[in-house]
Amino acid sequence: MSGMLEGRSILVTGAAGGIGQAAAVLFAKEGARVIAADLNPDGLAETARIASDAGQAIETIEANVGSEDDANRLVSETIKRHGMIDGAFNNAGIEGDWARTDESTLENFNRVVGVNQTGVYLCMRAEIQAMLKAGAKGSIVNTASIAGIAGAMYMPAYIASKHAVVGLTKAAAMEFARKDIRVNAVCPGPIKTRMLDTLMGHHPKAMDATSDSTAMKRLGEPQEIAEAACWLLSDRSSYVTGVALPVDGGMVAGP
Ligand SMILES: NC(=O)c1ccc[n+]([C@@H]2O[C@H](COP(=O)([O-])OP(=O)(O)OC[C@H]3O[C@@H](n4cnc5c(N)ncnc54)[C@H](O)[C@@H]3O)[C@@H](O)[C@H]2O)c1
Image 1: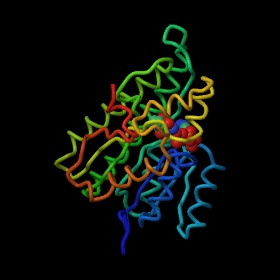
Image 2: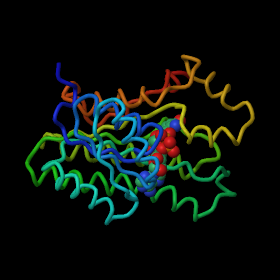
Image 3: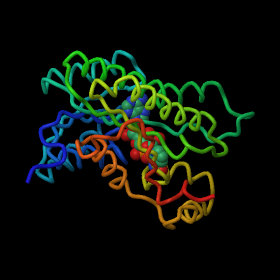
Image 4: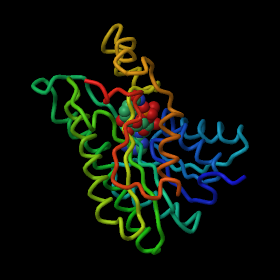
């Protein structure tokens, strides 16, 4: 039986760990030819090893998504190696400092926006340019967050940047719907990754409280976000574009 992404050339950013790593491995298992990109070469090697242990091959590229040259290179290199780019999971992100707005720094604001917002913009722009040039259909999934739907304290730059990812997603979805390029966002709730560990380090007992704040009363697994992204990248979601899909155990459904 063929996979959901059989033969597709797919770029995944932030693929050295957490959600991106789970996604790169899942997409490869679903038949995609995956290019895994990240700043962290050791993590990328680990992603390739996990895939290889599962009988899949993943190619890796070290790159900074916040750099215009690197974002363009990621797409041109994907096309050089695969002859095309059919889809992308723009997932790289950072949490930044934990500080109230009045105590936060411009340096942190620019750093977080530079990766989470500008990085998604630069990658998505290069991906769409390549898809348009090839005249081929495509599917792009951006990682926003429930922090792109609702506010939270002490992470103003992160909240702003994730709201911007939802905005960029909707804008591109409107622009390219009739060119057969779909653009959607996944909005993870609290997922068991390094990022959540780091954030919860700021609050004793916060992990339990966060888990309790979901309707399902549990944290999510990286694999559960990867599955949603896989569906959005595949033809099985062919009538879906411009959505910001919460994958959050029911967290934003409640009060
Ligand atoms: N874990 C959660 O609870 C949660 C919730 C909502 C949204 N998210 C989002 O999910 C995405 C993945 O996060 P994660 O939880 O897997 O955390 P993570 O820290 O494990 O993964 C993020 C990856 O992005 C990479 N990265 C950071 N800056 C980069 C850059 N400039 N260029 C290329 N790669 C870069 C990191 O090296 C890392 O491998 C992020 O966008 C994050 O904001 C996570």
